Length: 618
Image (cartoon, rainbow, N blue to C red):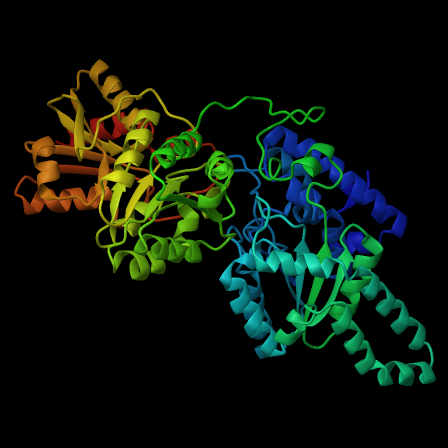
């Protein structure tokens, strides 16, 4: 196999055209086989095989800087840079990351896990290069889905005006995770029709540049050419108006054409935008037919495309069903998604209530501000969004929602530890940043029954902004419903008190059982609401507590445990001994949730051990 001999860009440059085509076929088979075993992002990587190979034929990523946008499409790049033998550990605990990570390889220029920042980062690198009088090349590989994010346009606007030599490669496959929406998507669709013109332009330039007379004819006809382009593609000057030299669309599955185009872009003295048209899921029938389904997959059967393990109901699916039920009763309810309708369980709502469903693309800040506008005019907007993605809407939550006390409902999905996507996707910060927002109510269901009840309460009874935060996946052994009270005692005990919320309450209850076997009586308190937290909310359930352990899967700074103990001290009921069990003040690596909980001491065994150590110190 050719792939086994590839370790860096130099190895790819040494291949013949025929060997390059063979390599692309091997890469596709390698990706399908690997991801079918480990799970991961498949369709997006199948779509960039030829593009990534062409990049490595023209550039050397050990020196040149290749900045990915989102980064989930980096598998081919990793396989070509000496990491193909580690793909059996892809997205596993202590294994190969599913995103670019500089600590893994010098070929990974920048950590990438969220969308729309690549042009800004690449421009920063280009400016640093120029200031240092160095010669390396800088590329930003972005997608058409990322262009729905406002940060992309901030970067493009500044990069085009900068005149810095850099290349933006726009990988246009008509998809982000779900189908793209908006004016930019329509604009790119129009540009895709210009292939005939661009092929004519390329051959015309090549033919005339073969002689001095021809070059003069080409230069004389430049204005005519621009007028022709303007008439054939009225919108085609969009990127050129920003200051980029634009070329494309280029067939993203033609390695020879891509190599020639990138070589041309490499020789330009200024910002260039290369528009590449690819097919998401290319080369695997099931992924081509359902690219959104094969964007991120669990292990699957290659022959059928079916997952090897059927998944049951999740908090996301229950959220979507519950919201649809509420929307049948209340015509004011609208649902908002930021290109994640399938991931957040809103596909059913979208089919039932198409006029009340709004997918805004990858633009979370816009989604929050739009929700504020809808709430101001009497609607009940419900924005379902991953916790780590909601971070980008923080300013709008403060300025547009909270300042006016508007009733915007947030479905904060993927709260807590999410598993294999790692540092960039864990929802470990929302307990802190949501609790900072004046007037914000944060509810934490620990079961599907509580999800339904708390969502109804959030929609119908809460005034002002409200968030319902819930984890990825399904419920645990706790399947009851505590109603609307702030806190509930689930288990009585005299030796210590364990406080937790969300699905971690299952670990707290299991820890209490372990402790009971060791002769220790542990009280378990479940928080149903983590903001606002007031003295009266905790006085009844925590008065008399001398030894307290607070268990949560978030960062320590601003965690609920800190706020609880502050209130207890202020009320004169502060514990004598305190243990805060959380994720600490660092980013958490990838791995299964069970593995991470164990590594952090957040599982039942870790909690029980921490309680025993606390009692021993007493």
